[in-house]
Image (tube, rainbow, N blue to C red; front, side):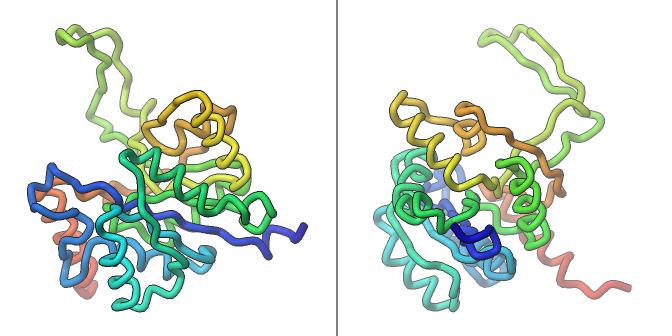
Length: 245
């Protein structure tokens, strides 16, 4: 088998949801952010990350052709395929791994990254940091620190507080998440056999015994879910475009 420098690093970008909380009547990742679809901003970050070899886009079944058109329109050369996703995030991840299975089993793919298409502000440096950490441990994810003046509670359905955690013991999980390709494929095979669906890729990977390390990044790597998130993303991009004094 060739060494890791000859093997692919594949970024899977998930864009199969519809984002009903946005209330826009369309898939939120197709909405415009400073003149380009949110999804294009997301894919462009992986285009600009030299360590990423290729990108696989998982689209809503009714939007595959539209997403293929965006890939061609914006010259996203690393996108090697646009496939239909499933009814849930986990199912979309499983379908992406199935599409990559032959190459993973042949040892052609080193790492698989999973990223939410609705996180358009991720940077190449953040992506590279997660890749580096996952090579050391087998799995890594980007996360943001909880604000130091916040405390999180575990509560019952009727509002009773059961447990508290200080902010320095917690992190807000984000994407990208990166994993050893063979190990994450095996984790999803096990999840399918057991009827398990994880809240994110790391949950399924850890369930199968994998180690996942946290790479802390800035809170700017937000997931665009509501109109307020879109305004925040616009403001952040505007601030980045202003010349420093």
